[in-house]
Image (cartoon, rainbow over all chains, first blue to last red; front, top):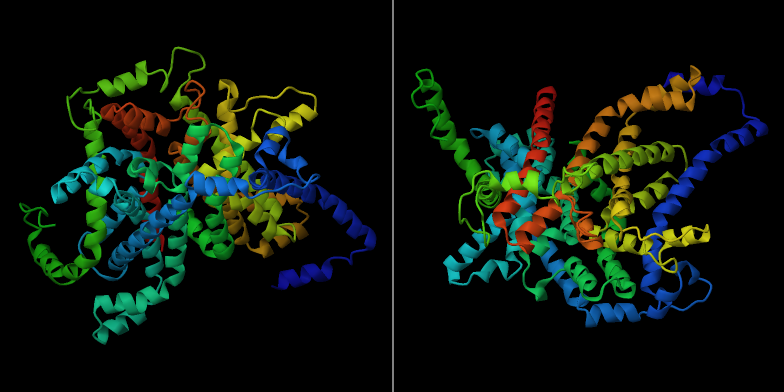
Length: 304
Length: 319
C-alpha cells in the first residue's frame, strides 16, 4: 500500500510531450491487438455474411464484396431448415443435450456429496480412481458399450435397438463420461462449504438427504451452473459420440446433419454456412449470457 | 471391501472398527455413491477392460471371434502405412500427423495465448478483446470446420486466404486438398479455436500477480520486457504446465474437425489416431484392429492420468 502511494508521489508529473511519447510507445501494442482481433473475427463474419447471400452470388464473388451491392436473402435458411431437415435436428440436439446435462449433474452431485461430507472406507482411493478416469478417451469404450446396449435391449424386450435406436445410448454415454469430471468439480466446491453449518444440521438431527437437498445444493448453484453450462455446450457441440450412438437418421443432431450435407452435396456453402450458423446460435447465446459461469467451468476443468 | 487382508494378524482390531464404520457411515454413503459408481463401472471401466481384451482378438462384427495375440499391434506399427509408415523419410501416417499436431498446435496455442493474455492486460478494451479471441472456444468443432473450409476455399472468389494471395499476384492454393499443406491448414484452424482458452487461463493467473510487485520492479527501473521475463513468466509456469497438458490431451483425441474438413484425406494424408480408430472400427468393421488403436490412445493418455493423480495428491497434502 505505502509503496504504491510513494511511487505516485515520487513519479514526476507527466507533461503533454511525455504523454504523447507514451502513446506512441504503446502504439505497437494497440496495433498488434487490433490485428489479432481482426484475424480472429474475419472467419466468423465471413460465415455469417455468406449464410445470407443468394447461392449464385456465393459462387461468383467473395463475401467481402457483398457490402457494396446489398443483396441478402433468408432462402439458404429456409432450404437448410426444411428441405434438409435442420429444423428437426435442432430439436434433436436439444433433446440429446438437456438430459445429457441433467443426468450427470444429478448423479454427480449425489456422489460428490458423499465424497465431501460422509465418511466411508476407501473414500480417497475411490476418489483418486475417478480423477484418473477423467481423461479416458471415449474410443476405449465405444464398441463394448454398443454391444452392452444391444444385449441389454435384447434381454429386456427382445429388441436389439431398444437403446441404440433411441437417444438413450447417447444419454448414458455422455453421462458416464461426464461423471468423473462432474464429481471432481462439485466435490472441490462442496468441501469449501462451512463445516459448522453441516455439523449443526447433523446435530439437529437432519438426515444426509435433507442436508444435501436443503443446504448443499442451494449453496452450490454457481458450481452446478458452471458444470451444467460446460456440459450442455460440450454435448451440443459433439459430433463423434453422436455418430457412434445415434444410428437412426431421424434422431440425428445438427452436427451429424452438417457432415451429411457435406457428403451428399459436396462443398455447397449456401447450405453449409446457414447450417453451421444455426448450430452456433445456441452456444453463442449461452456464451454471451452466461460467460462468467462458462469461463469458471473451463478454468475449474484445467487448473484444479 | 470385505476382502481386506483376511490372513493378517495385526489387521484384526482395526478390522472390527472398520466394520462398524462401514456399518454406520459407509451404509449411509451407499445411496449417494451407488448410481454414479455403477454407471462408471458398467459403462466405462468394464468397457475399457473389454476393449483391451478385444485388441488381442480379430473382433469381426465388433464381437469376440478369434484370438490373435499381438498380431493387431504388430500390423498397426509395422505394416499399416496409413497409421505409421517408416519406409519413407520423414516418416508419415496418422501417428506422425498426430505428433505434428502435438508440437504445432500446442506450441502455437501457448505462444498466441501468452501474447494475447499479456498484451490484453495493458489496454482499456481488454474485456472486448478477450471475448473476441475466446468466442470460437464455445463453438462446435463442426462449425469451426465449416468456417475454415470457407476461409481456405480454393477459388479466390470464395476463400479469403486465396483472395489475398490472388491480390498479391500469387496463384491460389488448395489448402485442404493437397497432402503437403492439409495438416498445417487443419492445425491452424484448430489453433484459432483453442487459443482463447489458453489466453483466459493465463490471463486469470496474471491477474493473481500482485500489482505491487510489478510497480516495485518498475520503480527499480525494470523495462516492460524485464517485467514479463523476470516477474510474470516465472509465476505463470504452473498454469502454463496445466494448459499444456490440457492441449496435449485435446490433440490426442482430435477427431471432429478432421472428419468434417477432410475425412482424413486427400488419400489418408491428414489422418490422425482417433480418425484411424473410427475408420477401422466403424467403416471397416474390424473391431479388434480398431481396439488396438484405442489401446494405443490409452497408452498415450496414461502419463496424463498419473500426473493428474500426483497433482491432486500434492494439493490434498498442502491444503
